[in-house]
Image (cartoon, rainbow, N blue to C red; front, side):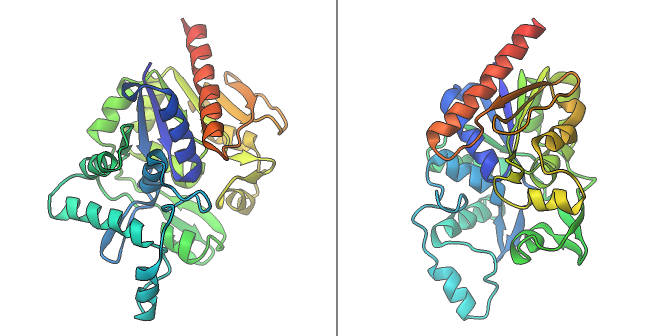
Length: 310
């Protein structure tokens, strides 16, 4: 069975890691969000790709969820002392990733897909991690303070300006590798990532969403909302800004007809959707064992739905 996981941010990285622990390498492809990529200090920064990469490699910071364990901050401190831009926290070890990636892209002429493959290999990651696109497709955030670049809103402004809408580029195109993986997919898993700024940018890269709608028989999403709040990040605030209920049901309704199944946290209120199998599970992923448990629940639901389709 071929499974494709759409992942962005910490929640996406955790589920991707759980799936990678259970599935053979040739049965899993992880597609990472690149909508929040940007240039900083003259370097190509890919925050969501790196969060997935570091988590798969087992070197992600447990406390922060992003960046590397055992990180130091001497370079960042010195940049600040020189009155340079120190608002985006790049650690000394993390800096090496950005330096290597930028070298691969600019000096070696590699695509982002090829550069990501090299970074994975160098850290012993055998799981197949693909950027959704090789081109820049920046996500913009229209706020009450004006239109902001994603990282300006998310990091510099600490996601405090109220969001009016998320602006995705009309020109985003998926890579051939991504298209091929989706065409062969028996199931797509939408990880518990922010739907609006982590998953929608992936679905927006043509022709990802049409392929999923037309060709993939099973599409499962896992809730990023537990107990009326986001596990991490600005999702709950965004929903409140828009006057929406902060709940798993709101997330499921957002994906709508794309889904055949949805997993919500068993501690929350159950709900129903036409033509969608709704399953309650313990969706907290605090440990590696938790990631494996949630991933197994996802695989179980995929297998059940495939048996029903047979």
